[in-house]
Image 1: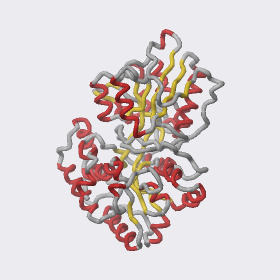
Image 2: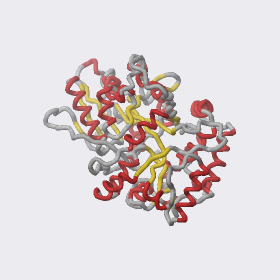
Image 3: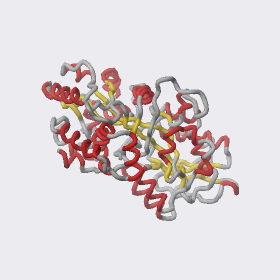
Image 4: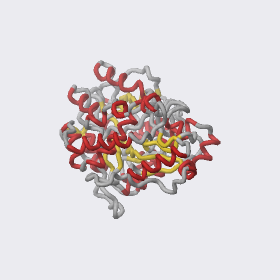
Length: 442
């Protein structure tokens, strides 16, 4: 999914201090090949983390890993998100594949496995991958580990408290009838209720997917992802729910031509500037807001920004409070030198590295970074529910993302919700991946 975007901070690597650490431009070459057992290696890493804060975090981690593993150096290749899929596909199919690369997961990863383009990491990660819990299983195919997550994501409604108050709304909606009532109130106050960036297509899937999560059991969703089918009646009911909701005309005019995160006229820009009351988006949205409005305006707006989960659908048999979630991760190409490639992926998931990643407004993949401890370690707090995550809700990267001061961070508001609710990602079944879903139902 995914348009232009996202996050991350921390200082750039001092090139003079680590001459072997190469931070290359997008046109750099692919894998260095070889085997790390033979001596020095250079790992080429392609990612769509092309701006701070995550770019800076990755630079810091490459530098620190090189310091403790002087035989391993890096060439980091940041690629703009919209260009990434085409570039990595060509590289994997040719002789220019990077050693490490940002992995979309789901059907993308399955195709790469079928084509023999990526490495089965199980022999290298089996001793520690269990620390990540159930989310690591989402990066397996046929029981083999082909990807490793480094962060988690959650999707919900970001809303403007000031616009809610102007429309006489005193609390965020807990049910779909309440949300539809709030849509009516906002329109009566001449406020666009919900902004959506349908031009980029991927935000549309959140709506269908959430209705499917409400209408289908977790077991049905997992079976649909595994079998790549959506034959259960609950999926048809999710489509009916979405069509009924769209009949309330909740979105801005010409929403099908509105980009998600590019420019002030995007759906994110509309919420950031107070031209729309809410947007169904991922935990990364506040970082996007900050890049689309002046620093002074964003700092004054942070107190007006709130978050709530997708409302319950009365009578629906699925989980009424489950959050749509997912993760970002990496894979190693078949040309990658081992064990260097897999060992670096383990380093990214170490508690120390994960704390830096969490500092970039992300939910870390390793619960140890939040004090929960790895599997076999300290128990999580009582009352927390299990998390069922599947790759695919990877956050898009904003080409020129920047942070304006301290600001509000998505991870700060969503972290508690992440721990208190079950998170389900259901992008594996085809209806939710259909980019024409909003066009067909408008």
